[in-house]
Structures are given as C-alpha cells and as structure tokens.
Length: 67
Image (cartoon, rainbow, N blue to C red; front, side, top):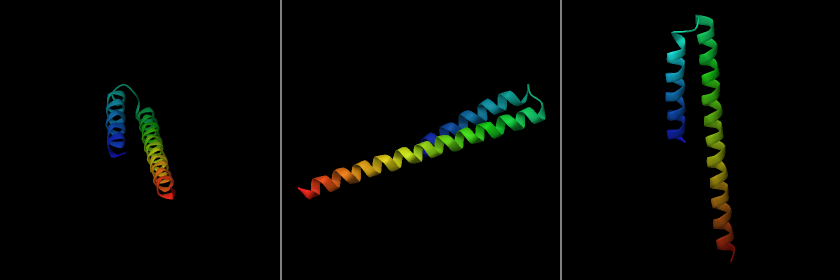
C-alpha cells in the first residue's frame, strides 16, 4: 500500500508541476486539488484491497482449522 501511495504522489506531483507553468494560478490550484483527490482515492482503493485480502486469508485459515 505504501509503494502505491508513494507512486501516486510522485506521479501527481510531476503532472501538476509541469502543468503549473502553462496554467493560471487558479487552474493550477484546481489541478492540484484533483491530483490530491486521485491520490486519496488510490490510497483508499489500496486499503480496501488489502483489507479484502486479509479477510480472505483469515477465512482460509478458519476453514483449514475447522477440519
């Protein structure tokens, strides 16, 4: 999850950084907010996937110990 979050932050910082030179201040602010939202969404998706994987692993362990 940490790797995914860091990758998303890096990519968003690069894309916002190159766009700031061409856009007005307001437009750059909007771009940054959108990039932040995307990073947040990506982190939430990664957390959900991690939770789902842990739940599946727990179910498998529970099934194995029931027999």
